[in-house]
Image (cartoon, rainbow, N blue to C red; front, top):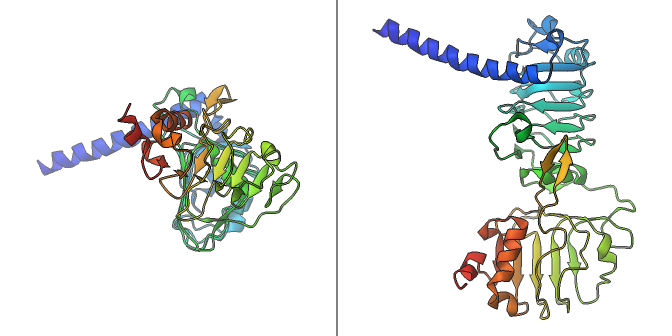
Length: 366
């Protein structure tokens, strides 16, 4: 009986693994993977290195580097020197590598529906170092327990999303998570901007940026991005605000005579990393009677590879991302204002506070 049970268990395990392999093979087939450029061994080690299609620019693989890989960073650099596009999955786990620059030639990664990009428990890793990577088309990017990691160093990354409808798959939540890294870890403004179309789990600081005519610490004519908190008061020149698209910090509107947010006509994204601080704080504005934002409103669909994307608009380390306090009393008396704001930004109820109340508490009065 035990023998039969063992056979059944082994058969079940084999079936599960076969199913996973079959799914990945189907994905490879859809992407027209060249058999000569497919690495079927998965784990790259000294014993499998000769099987890797090192002459191919596009490689299809469930590629994993781990404690068994016993290959130096120089050896990996040589193996991967021609690879520009990876179709499948990539995991780098429990290694002694200090940098991922052995993959610096990589320009794109496209995962299957079960695939992800994962770097975990690489305790000597200082940077990811994928300096030429421009797109990650994976539903999940997980970078965790790399305790000495201080930088991503992925300066050219522009695209991070997963096109579920392209592969007729059930939609899951796409996200990037950066957890349990060095206390000195920081993320650049360019890297943060790339996460705009996915849910992110990032609670670290910004790297000090290189300022130019477009990225400014103080709003001046022509600025498109603001680094740091942007406070708008009664003395602020609202005309200058019309060109600002992104705030890497919090938006604070305090003590003004504004009636609406029309002067923020270009603002698309507010990303605060400050602990215990909302992304948007609006207080002491007695004439304010319209609380929706022109471009932070309904996410503007954008097309990429014929897939429609909807971008998230604000992010904060706090669950309550938007706070209104002591403004025109109509904001508290008219529940539709809060409800319309919540719906227009597709936020959960607890994301918006008006005098410490959620939208649902106003909705009950309708």
